[in-house]
Image (cartoon, rainbow, N blue to C red):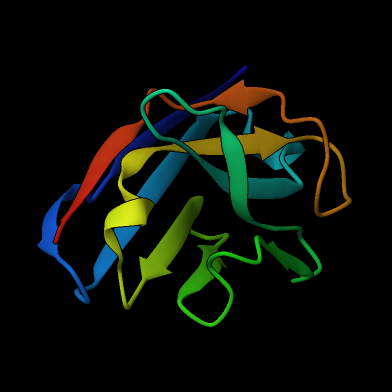
Length: 120
């Protein structure tokens, strides 16, 4: 099993920045791809960004050029640097991990989420 714990969410003004972190523990050697999802009130959960062990990345069109995903495999941590935040980025952000190697796999493990609120 793998456990994921997110941190770094909060309230930020329109145009501001935040960095989310997600620390993995447990059988971390089995993880290949890690990613970030978000779910806004009344909306479906959507993929935001993901990265596999080779460094290949995926970004949703809505965050390209504003968000950057990165990993520290020594610390078993994945980050999401978010810039130029907009009110529509307001959501609960979830970290996810997968045994698969492609950038958009079925994710096997999920964190509990961290709230990001962007004020207008």
